[in-house]
Image (cartoon, rainbow, N blue to C red; front, side, top):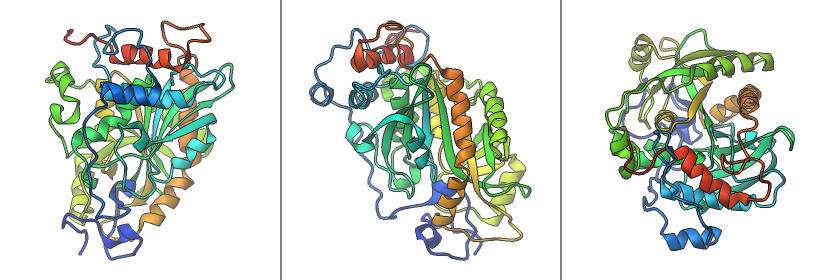
Length: 389
């Protein structure tokens, strides 16, 4: 049997080799396929928010700043306050990160390269769902790339949740909503994926220039309900920033990483592709295939963030010469490409230096603290008043 389509992952996903050629990397690995419990979707109450981060004054309406972009939800803003509060007292931290990154399978250790970093478990934010996938630590890490005077603050998610874990569609975008609430203007989304081109190599980086979404959900299912009317019917103008695509490919090569731009095919999973499906995806123009990233890219784009995404090729699908892989292979292959991904993140951070650490209202004011920073972030990332155009 070439690829299992029974609606559950192949045994190789649990660390046992089987006869099925696998693809899609991180997006097809369960820690335990019985762990299919979705997190509650309710947001914090006002009392719950105050209990976590203190009775802080927002300094104004958190729901928009007049730039025509939807705001991050209140729950994401409350979670951002909790994350920012942990960093209180760190030199240079003013409650804002300029760059956000989602670290996929095998790439979580990149967060350890951030300087002056701190972390908080995803479950402690009260906003993020817990992942059951192997290689997804489930932490939010904030730290700096570069020196204290001119560095860039980066907010990193060590792992993500996937639709195949049983999570509702709106939970898949909560990570980037939190990054937006922390003030990020640019996000880098990373994943481990299956390569579809015969000339690809394991460890190669594919910087996404576009995607094919085979899981497409309606706008209200992918966004918080109160924001759906603001974006319904608005056609996308390109989810991945063209300048960032060029920047990322160029940054990877000096790090001795093989890199190209390409198209990502987004499937639901958790079953793997058949040989016929591999051929179909190639003919459709896809270069890599996986089961994540696209919901985050769509949400980030609608929040007005610049989006870059990179797939690490962890195995190459050859329909006429099927091979086998397993979860450990995927993690090792992705980790081997970490230097190239780090080079991309550093390049993006270099372009964003000067954006983090100060809100528009607080540039040059050293002592405002993380509470005021996050309050300003919500207004800037949100970009419009509730009910505005």
